[in-house]
Length: 188
Ligand SMILES: Cc1cc2nc3c(=O)[nH]c(=O)nc-3n(C[C@H](O)[C@H](O)[C@H](O)COP(=O)(O)O)c2cc1C
Image 1 (cartoon, helix red, strand yellow):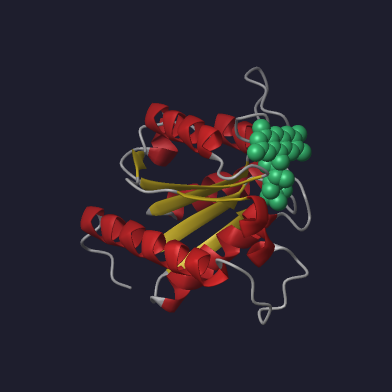
Image 2 (cartoon, rainbow, N blue to C red):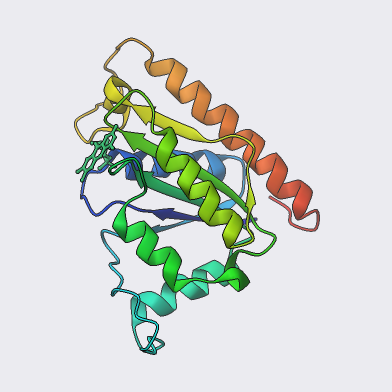
């Protein structure tokens, strides 16, 4: 199964992006394809309803990746209790035809304990795009972000580090079960 992971930060070493990369790694370990679309590395122009943007290679790539995907993960930093501007802009480029009937997992990183506001808003957008929200979501916040910072070396022990990994593994596993139930013809 082909899973598209859109990372919604405009920051090079974003913890939300590294969290999404970890989710993609878990998906690949289960035998599925996980493709990353990084909005920092592949910036999109501002969506403008009056302009045709078919010639923009980044917009064309996003649309083509979305059409190929059977399931989608959306990652965002929590900004002012909401999702990032670059992720909202990316979703504005897409319509219901790209999301309809596809399972979508929302994940976030926040300065506070958890980024529930951004996740709630992301799920509302997914509903309007006719995607199928996964019943669970993932948010890391506060010191939990350490596990996904660029300077984390994989050996450092700190309170809760294994809990976070187990939580991400469990939620990604249940997301894949939902995606497979919706796509019974897709094999790992
Ligand atoms: C413009 C801006 C707005 C923010 N708003 C919030 C917020 O409302 N609530 C919160 O908990 N953290 C907020 N933060 C902190 C970020 O959510 C936090 O640094 C997060 O880890 C960023 O994710 P990233 O590592 O993927 O960039 C904000 C940060 C910025 C730059």
